[in-house]
Amino acid sequence: MRKLENSELERKSIEAFKESKKTPIILVLDDIRSLHNIGSVFRTADAFLIEKIYLCGITATPPNKEIHKTALGATETVTWEHSDNVLTVIENLKKDNIITLAIEQVESAIFLQDFKVENNKKYALVFGNEVYGVSQEAVALCDGSIEIPQLGTKHSLNISVSAGIVVWDLFQKINWPA
Image 1 (cartoon, rainbow, N blue to C red):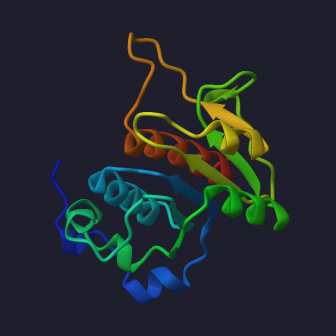
Image 2 (spheres, rainbow, N blue to C red):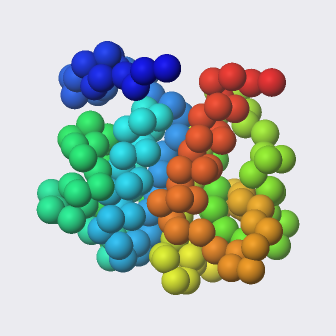
């Protein structure tokens, strides 16, 4: 077995990325404090051709040296927009018939492994603050909630880890349905 060289990975150019058919997933980051978490989410979004990221509230925006450390250029490929108010973003997404899902531990959340994607639907995944999670107001406004099952003592994951897990799960369900 031989590790592949970067030149063998058939990476898309920025232009090719922007022209590529996107995965019908939008990420909504609300009040994310860590610039490294923001950068990591950008990198995940690039890897899975995510349509767009909304950066809400206190969530920092590119260009930013600390975001760039983990994004490694993904801020140049992934479309993003800042909004002061996450509730306005969720309301507008719903008006566009996009299914909004809080990624949070709430009553009647669907466990990730049980979540079924619908054909020809677009999803917006709402991720909240590192300490407080998705606000109750945002949870109440969303169409539903997905919970990542956790068996340890913390029942808490880093937001960039949560984003990676949920995006991968939905990506593979959309692209390779069982």
